[in-house]
Length: 339
Ligand code: ATP
Ligand code: LTN
Image 1 (cartoon, rainbow, N blue to C red):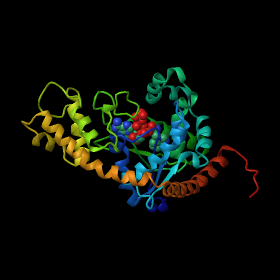
Image 2: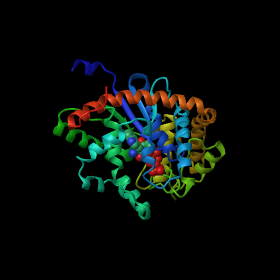
Image 3: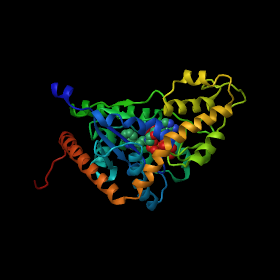
Image 4: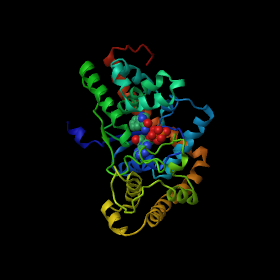
């Protein structure tokens, strides 16, 4: 297909508006989206429908949507070069999820790692939406026929199920969906908690000292990094198995500062952990201070955020409608609405 070779690649990715973005979200996800804006057709979603799969407060959700839009932009997402949208504002995501759910084996959903983790955490308040989460995510991707989905390591399994569903749909109803490719960065794809470096940095971690938020002020950033859990050795050396805390800090420094891991080892040979942590803190503060300043200004202008999200949703809707009209026809739905 000549057109296919010439057309711009479509990039789609999303984050849940469940709170402030942390360094894992930034390094594993948002920072890597920026380059795509120059050469690809980009759709960056705020997935509010995913955020209601665990207990939540509606007023917080509303606030978090605007806050996330401002954080995207503060990180360098430029709405004049991409389409930023709120998932529930584009009609079709839930419709496509329903159709895909009808070809998705139940057992495959029950085996998803993220589902098992979250089901354990919310055992007393478990809804079927949580089990269905990966099907909605597959719909988010396939409704735009996305070629590339940049995500952190933890989402790899969800992209695999998306590809399985696309293939199964194509086999059952004829060729319709592109099989999306994940983009998972080499460094930064799995940033660990500073307090328990065996588990990933997370918004929902009960020990908030382990999570660096991109809007934390310089003092908080320094305190969190200086109190990061390390080991009883003294060498700044990369060894994920035996020195997970130090390796995590090295990953953070490398992803933010652009130094290679072996360059970091060389420059801190013979130096102690205190000196190393201070240098990591300097890199983090330097990288995040401008993000925080931009965020404060952006989040204060709700009208501007509404305009960005409304334009983004309109563009996303146009693309989603084209793909959904094909899907509806192929599965045998009739359209009796007046034209
Ligand atoms: P929670 O921390 O509450 O479980 P989350 O931050 O994992 O939520 P999202 O906000 O939906 O969930 O994640 C958005 C993006 O950030 C995804 O692409 C995800 O892969 C990536 N991501 C999340 N945590 C990390 C991490 N610790 N390291 C690298 N990437 C991450
Ligand atoms: N499941 C993802 C968020 C998400 C997503 C998507 C990511 C929902 N839909 C589509 C990429 C593409 C998460 O928890 N991080």
